[in-house]
Amino acid sequence: MSSALPVESIKSLSDQHPKPSDLHFQYGTAGFRTIANTLDSVLFRVGIIAALRSKRLDGRTIGVMVTASHNPEPASSYDDNGVKLVDPRGEMLEASWEVHATAISNAPTSDALIEVLQSLVQTAKIDLSKPANVVYARDTRPSGPALVAALEDGFKAMGATARDAGVTTTPILHYFVKAINTKGTKYSYGDDSEEGYFQKLSNAYKKLVAGKTPQPPLIVDCANGVGALAGENLKGYLGDALQLILENTSTTTPGALNNACGADYVKTSQKLPPSLANILQPGQRGCSLDGDADRLIYFYLDDRGVFHMLDGDKIAALVAAFIVELVKVAGLEDQIKVGVVQTAYANGASTKYLAERLPVKCVSTGVKHLHHAAERYNVGVYFEANGHGTVLFSQPTIDTLAEYQPSTPAQSRAVEHLVSLTELINQTVGDALSDMLFVEVVLSHKSYNGEEWDSLYVDLPNRLAKVSVPNRNAFKTEDAERRLVSPDGLQSKIDDLVNRYQGGRSFVRPSGTEDVVRVYAEAALRAQADELAMRVAGLVYDEAGGDPASRPKEFL
Ligand SMILES: CC(=O)N[C@H]1[C@@H](OP(=O)(O)O)O[C@H](CO)[C@@H](O)[C@@H]1O
Ligand SMILES: [Mg+2]
Image (cartoon, rainbow, N blue to C red; front, side, top):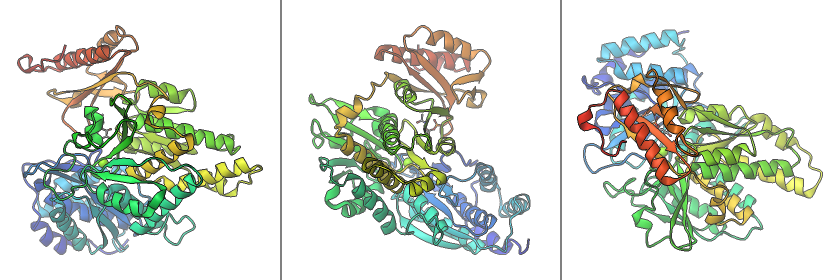
């Protein structure tokens, strides 16, 4: 080990990005995320962390994405923003470094910062003589440029080599990281440019739908975010292969981002964005991206003009069944095992549908848990109900597909399709545009419209509620968050309630991103699901010591 921290340069730049003394930051499920105008010191320090992480990994390139995803952007100083780090294979930051990131972001002064950094260099055995390489990007939020300037000061303090990927989607930034780190190797992931990304996706899409009747045009709600820019680009590469009609593309209108549109709006309100009311026609399908284009929710209007949502669970059911079928037709079912990963929020009907066809695993909320569990299958399909997900093909599976000698034309076609899917589907992280193309491929192959896809299974009515409690850390769970172990005795009271409802299921867990406890409930009938959710919410509120005077009226 050699070389030392550039203490003077860190200190002098750190003094220009002082930490607000009254705030505590935490690197959570979605990185650092809070009100934009409090994040200056965090961004500066993330620049340093990214450089150290790169040095720790022999100079491999680390990604940094500045985004607050689906969070709203009110035209005021309360605009949210955030930042997260991407590891060399394009994945989320390793969990042990989340702790380091939190400690570094909270050092009160420049001197304290140096101390925390020195101790990280020691404990993580970082060789400071190694190079530091970083690639970074931001979404379209107005607070982005100032935060990026603070981030760049962090790189400068460390003497890191940093590449500005400009304004782009979160999944494209993840793609860049993997492409840069595999460049020139036999595992090259693609050209490390936006052009490389769009070429890869559109070429694979065109191969997969060759000879199929083109689908009717697809309405894409871009959430007034960066997906509008990427969508416009993708449109050009797709040409006639798929007609995209981009809506909600006002990326520069203050306050428009994620406002009454986008994947989170559709999923949580279970409504069509009002801006699409006169655009989406009965029988037509549409989809919504979120603000950084890593979530995707589909929908359609039936013949009577009634809105129906096709969420992450419906996407998982559609695509997993398709892959299983291709593997079977290819004659590879003994070599390639397909599995699905969900969270407790997956609709019970989707779990039943999937479990009748392939192995299904339930893990804790948060993409990193899903991603890691999916890596254990040859082909791992994972989706959160909110529309974030992807399909991972293990390297041995990719090798199997490359080496396989099919014995019939049908086998050969199926293998070609599977190979094209490995190119179409973003292997690093959930990617709304890549997932959208995948859905379109399956709809084409199956000749399904929205309604036929929707009829694979019927969603159980469900309800999500938030409960404000004095201390959400008192809530501890087990069994992939499906059961409470603390507060003592609460789970058996929940069980008693659930048993009174036909098809009832409910669970309670502390949120990782908000200071609330979440309650989920489903049951065979709408009114029962609502009632069960409100009873459990009321129970949680009372047992956790909520103030009777401010008990929400809807709680039972
Ligand atoms: C019920 C729900 O949608 N929870 C979301 C939300 O997590 P919570 O820990 O529930 O706050 O934000 C996470 C990060 O975006 C996302 O992974 C997750 O699905
Ligand atoms: Mg997002």
